[in-house]
Amino acid sequence: MGAEIIDGKKIAGGLGEANAARSEALRGAGIEPTLAVLTPGDDPNAGAYARSLVKAGTKRGLVVRTVELPAGVDPAGFERLLKEAETGAHGVLVLRPLPAGLDPDAVDFLVDPDRDVDGVHPVNAGLLALGRPRFVPATARAVHHILKSTGVELVGKRAVIIGRSNIVGKPLFQLLLAEHLTVTVCHSRTRDLPGVAREAEVLAVAIGRAEMVTPEYVKPGAVVLDAGYNWNDGLGREQGDVHPDAAEVAGWFTPVPGGVGPVTTQMLVANVLIAAERGKTR
Ligand SMILES: NC(=O)c1ccc[n+]([C@@H]2O[C@H](COP(=O)([O-])OP(=O)(O)OC[C@H]3O[C@@H](n4cnc5c(N)ncnc54)[C@H](OP(=O)(O)O)[C@@H]3O)[C@@H](O)[C@H]2O)c1
Image (tube, rainbow, N blue to C red; front, side, top):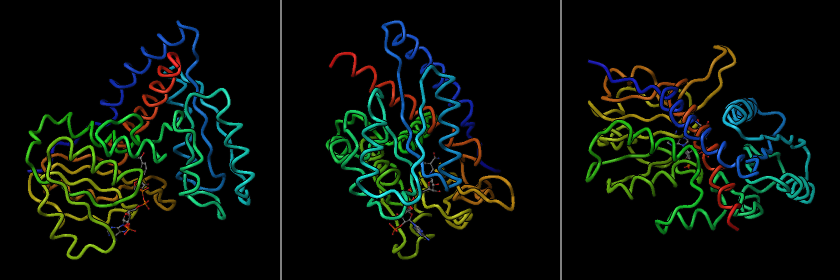
């Protein structure tokens, strides 16, 4: 049979129009919604994400400033760059992988929670865990939004997430739990990963291993959501974490490219707009 292929670009187009209208309203009130992106200079995945944010954000009415993190930056130098970047910006995003010598957990604590549009600060992660979300990591929001857009009944269904990172797997767990799914989170130590994954009516994947999830991981008819983004120099394009052949077994399937990626970008733009709108009333 083969899955219904979910058109992430189309979903992103609708979100982008809504974002543009919100930007317009802010600009009408004299507020220029502004995002600062700190990016490691030498990582192709982060570089591609930063460029897509500049393009998509600018198109939807944001000012997007990028700041390159030098390879040898030390914690004090990083903190100085971060505070400079935050000045005048409603949202700030620190892309990974961080330059060697910076502790990712310490960096999450340094970001101003009111500008933390990636939802990494403990205050924002905690609010999400308490069911009172403010800034939710954009990729998790995107996967959740795409799932809802299928119209598939979710209550009581079995979901499996592969990957437990703070920016995808864990926040997605909270979002799916709030939809009353029964959620299992898998990781590199999970035993019989294909067997656990095959129990899922909703399978969400964020591991960073190109096309690792093959058809044997997929329950027939499942909704398969692939957050993976793995640049392949040889192919000259990105690959997902799910093998395209899995679409033969799934009921719904997000392709890479053109699935979760473009929706994530619009969710990040939406988070900047939330920050700018909150700023208006502070
Ligand atoms: N579309 C977007 O805009 C977007 C945004 C962010 C990330 N991504 C992509 O999403 C993917 C994940 O990113 P991330 O930042 O969440 O990655 P991460 O921080 O490296 O976390 C990867 C997770 O996958 C698990 N894992 C790794 N190898 C595994 C294996 N062989 N079997 C089972 N689990 C395994 C790890 O388990 P342990 O915890 O046990 O180590 C970890 O929990 C990447 O492809 C990334 O490029 C896409």
